[in-house]
Length: 439
Image 1 (tube, rainbow, N blue to C red):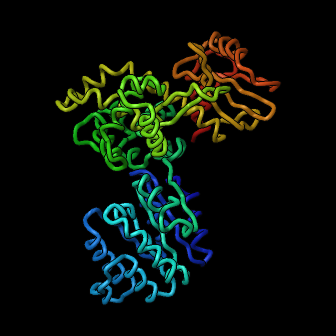
Image 2 (tube, one colour):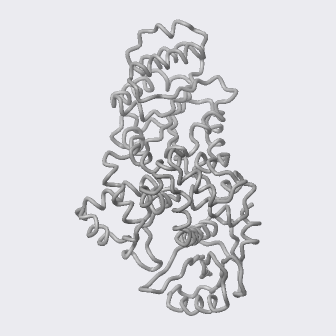
Image 3 (tube, helix red, strand yellow):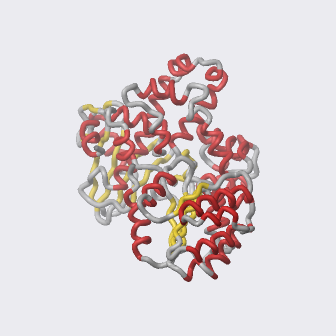
């Protein structure tokens, strides 16, 4: 799993030997727990997974963990009424308190006072020793407001924080070694970079077979995961689901979304801001413009689920996965093409796809019906690229050069590139080259 950077962040802080209060957070299934367990392995630290039961039950469970870790059985009978009191007792018992609380957001949901209790324990006890405390959470909105926010009692106490993002494409490929580049892109278009989702795909099967078995089959993990993701993060999941559904249908501007949903534009902007912060949506502005932006789905799994699972629920509930797959085959290929475009932009931005210069900005451009898939700007150079899921012709290259004349990029040197499955276009990067670059 590609978490070496995050792991080094934790290891470096631990080696410093001074008090640390770290916050690790990110969406469900992204691999935070696995990261914590890898970090804690071999260290005299306590790992505790909070639940949504009650504060009392959680404290009882934590007391047992501390008793086992310290060898002090009295912890199990300790009359500590709050998390803060329990941590104070732990700090008095060991030379270097080390504790990771996973799903800390659940405790906050049960009792927001737990943050104040923790702040007092940190200020009066834990920070005066070489304590190493990690708060980890999947409820991104709760962590960012109640723990990291300026109004949080813990504001100013944390010594570091890290938002764990989904895996990059190269790491997803490594988890599916049996797949060709094309099949890996198809898998990426369905599950994105969430490790648990990727593991639902079997690379001895075709991507289409995996879609049928792991996504289109009732009872499968990825069949209803879209609902669970929203319920985990927002208080009005039906409202957010409506907005996401219409974005997936092509209602991409604020005006169009307001019209089709009937939501007030001001409230709609707030909902969209939440979805952006959660990583479900992104606002894209064409190069050279400040407004005229559109909203697009930013999460591959959610994008796929909204386009292919949600509208076909009636048939899928009856076990007609093969029929849905056959009916949607053409739209699936179109979807793979759209995701491929975004992937190429990512590969250029992160430097996986090498250019004759270092890009400072990677963007799209469109005006009315004209569109350029990728424009990479450097200090003195600019690259224009056409991205095709199928094969490219010489005319594709010529059209790209023609369209580029409509884009003002100053006096930068112009470069042109076509990225496609194959073909006879000039300056072509095909799937074989992409396969080598992403291995």
